[in-house]
View 1 (tube, rainbow, N blue to C red):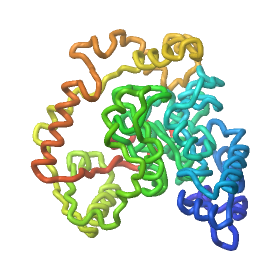
View 2 (cartoon, rainbow, N blue to C red; view 1 turned 60 degrees about the vertical axis):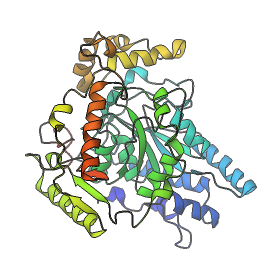
View 3 (cartoon, rainbow, N blue to C red; view 1 turned 45 degrees about the vertical axis):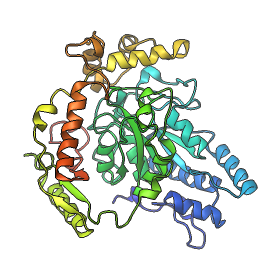
Length: 445
């Protein structure tokens, strides 16, 4: 690891009698330190702010766009509450890094675009409101691939290039690379990202995190600037499975502002910790998707790590079906994407009325305020005139599009037939690219 990941002088102040260490601290460890009187919210936020000051810009990590100027004030409020009640909320005092396409009423929201610089949304995104109500401190907004276009790198016209904390010459993937780099470098405890194709899972893979793309309908997309709404979802990016479960329990749930969450209304849990079972792999049947892991361009070292992971799963009692074959997969996997950016982003701005920062995509393109790397994508989006539902064939939602339904049913049918509980494959088949390298294999699934 680079010096970036080492303990700084500022971090040493986060210890008392050797009882608490900031680096790699989990939510439960922080709450235990609060309850033991070894730490309070203010001191915790101060230490993260000191670490941000020491490492984010000076070392060129560039993971964050804006720091919350009220973070310490919020911490003081939470300290007073704990002293008065003796109770901790689920995320009490936990500094959270929020991707810059989530609406935050008190911090600018830009989706990485200079065209939205300085814009304060009228309210919080559903998930942001949920974490605040759970006691979190929204510590900072993170850089992202502009408009979430790129799963390969994190570059925006609002903040430039974000680097990988394990090797500053390499990318943290995209588009949630800012959240990934910040959480991995201990600039915040946990983070929120969004995933349309691989934008939570890829950056988490690149930075040794647990990244969870929730099932569409489990978490609300209200207040998240869309890329392709029929594929978009937001979820946790953390350093441990336990923290991912804690964060998911806060952000999951029904939201009338996002009708797709009706599908998960009776399925979402408020306590995913109950599902964390150390012996949970015993007797589980896991299917290996070899057509994803054994790509011709797959890196040999990553392939070996994947094999080692399979061996670990077997060692914990899992039965591995290798390879797991899905009859008809090639046929049903075709044409699953729908480039609806123009339609979705224009509908988003329209829903804001007079509070919208711009009128539509045309205004953004006319402004010229975007990174050169996204210019082609923006022009391509302008050329897509027809709304998704008017195309031939129509592109409908996740639960009513025949192609999406067939894809889902084909996979589930194969799993049920073979008694498989879950599927395993590497999120990424190749090492992180060097900054500026757009030619090396990326192995993005």
